[in-house]
Each structure stands twice: as C-alpha cells, then as structure tokens.
Length: 481
Image (tube, rainbow, N blue to C red; front, side, top):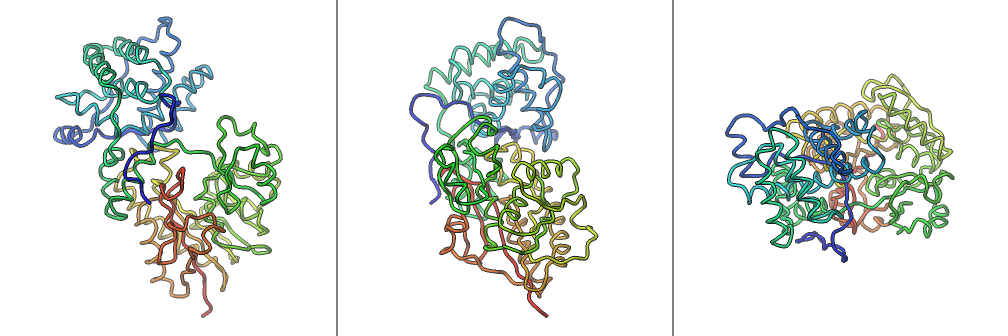
C-alpha cells in the first residue's frame, strides 16, 4: 500500500547524511517568477576566495556546491564532476562530506526550495538559493551542529561578491528555522519536479504518486545478486542481509563493498532487486543461448551466465564494456563480449533469449541518482521512446521461433514501458505477451503488487519495504508462422 506520509525518522536525532544529487527549477511560485523573465536562473561565475581560513570543512562545502551545480546543469553532470581534478585533489574525508551533502541536497531539493519560497518575498539568486540549501540540509539531516551549519554558510556567503550582500538574509532564515524546531515534514507533491509528479499522479493515482515521491527521503540499502542460493545462504549473516527472493540479498552494511564477505570470491555483484527481476522472469535458462543487447555494466549478463546460458554481451561503449569484462573476471563467469550498436549489430544469429534493457530516462533510479529527476525534460522522454521503438524492432529479428524477448526500462514513464510493448505487439503479430503471475512473484523476486493484470511487471519504488528502483518488465515470445 502506498504511504500517505513520509517515512518516520530513526530515533536518536538527525540521521547521518544520505545520498545523491539533484537540482530542481525552484518550485511553483519560484518557478513562475523565473518563467516570467523568459530565462532560467543560472549561477554567476564564482568569485570565491579559497584561501585557508582555518575551517577544514569549508573546502568540502565549496566542493558540494560545485557538485550540486554540475548535477543541475546537465544529465550525468554529477558523475563527471566527481572525476574532475579539483575534486579529486580534496582529502578522502572532504570528498565524502561533499558527496554526502550534495546528494542530500538533490534528494531533498523540492522540500528545501519549498522552505525557501515560504521564507522569502522575492526569489533569491541561484547562488543564494544554493547556500540556503546546504545550510538547511545540514540543520535537518546531517550530523552537523546547528551553530556550525549557520556559521559556515554565512562564511561562504561572505567569500563571494555576489552573495556577500545576502549574508544577513541567509543568517536570519537559517536561525529562524532552528528557532522554530527545524524543518517541517515534507509534502509529497513538492518533493519531485512538478511536471513529473503530475505524470505519476495521472498514470498511477495520487496515493501511488505520493508513495513514489516519499521514497526520495529514504536512503536505499545495497542489493546484491548471487550466483546461487547456496552462496547467498553462506554469506547472508556476514552481510547482515535479508533474502528478497530471486537470488537477491538486501544488505544492511555500509561502506566499501570490496571489503564485504564474498566479494573476493566473486559470488555476488551489486544490483538493485528490481533490475535483477528482468532476468528472473525467464525461469530456467540452462543450456539456452542469450544475447544482452545493452549489457553494461553487466549485472544481467552475469545473471544469464550464472544460470547456465551461453551469453553474448553487447554494448557500444568501449569504457562501459571494460566494466562488464572486469565484473565477469571477478565473478569467474564468461560471455562473448561485442562492441557494437544494438540497433545495427551485424550478426545473423538468432537466440533463445534476447534481453533488451533499453536506454531510457532512468526516472526510476532516483533513489540512488536523484539528479535524474531534475536533469530530465519532457522532450527527453519522447526522444528516448523513439530509440526504444527502433531497438525493439531490431531485437525482434534476433529471437528464435519459440524464443523469448524480454524488454525492460528503469523508467517510471508509461511511454517507455507499457506503450512501447502495446505498439510492438501491433507491429509484430508473431509475438505475444507471456503473462507473469502474482502466484510466482516471490520466485521471481518481484512484489506481487508490482505484477499488473495485463501480465507485465510495473515495479514502483514504494512497493517493496525499503524501496526498489522503478522498472517496467515484459516477457514476449515469438510464435511460429
């Protein structure tokens, strides 16, 4: 059942800082004012004095604002920013603090902007908004003393000429929030971009839209896919794990996964429970031939190989294929690696299993990548839907008669899921939908609620305790002529 209120906070004060990045055009009233000017707010060129003032946390906070700005500027901006030399030059502790702060701001962006909107008569500049955001997120969600959250934010305002005049406003707003007992509980409709929340409400109803949005406030656990049930049972206790079915274990551990039980033995890999369900819907594939058309980073390729299939793994990115190769080597699994575009791959072979986890808007991955919500635009969905259409048509010809085509996307948008499959079945009358059954949901590692009457799976993030990625999965079979 969809939650109608945000998850309760753990006891013991503020939770430790959480996760990923996102930036939102200022919410509602703020957005309207910006739109009236016919131009989005952009950050001015920074004129920050980076001289050492004795506060070892200042560089980390400056870096966090850089990550936030990068994430809100373009898709993949956050991932690019953390590889830049200036970020890598920070100490390990500073990088960890900066990442945690930036991801928390992105995760709570809608909530933070709502607070800023209520406490200002006129929309502040983007630079001032960013300062207020990092101040508020420290007050509400990080293990930072309130006085330090205020003082460091004011110091940051003093360093730049375009924010210095607003240090009094920043100080007053942050102290006012503290004086009134901290941040108010989030409102679901203000947690995500307005246009996306409206889409979710229209597609799945208000209760489900609220449940999806509230998942932004929870830090996700780490899910692990295992090669066998015996391996899972052998490492379950050491990993503090819960068996989710479908050879997926949810671990309560935090930190470097390379130090966890079983990593060096190659018996598991990190993969969200919803992503693992894509292969799980196939059942027994021992001895079958399979092709993973968009394979990187390799989780589904490893699942196919571990379950006895002879696998071809395809991707057009050399760097991404390198990750597939590294993962296969660690897990002692094998696949035929091919670098090619899935739509134009010149191979006349047909396979028992064709897996197409298609490029998509990835709005279902916001639990770990909150920046995707703020970087995605409505036009992106239409463009990606056209790519998915072409890839599906290409994939159809690679399926043997009697074989399976599994189509999936990590998107919450129906144009990239249900609509694609219905249109595909109209174009390809030799294919039919293999209906998934709620009675078999546990074996597939899928919540029964996520299996729809039509026979496909629509996994919404709040439909599993602790959450899951948003996914669409359909299994199609090719019939004889």
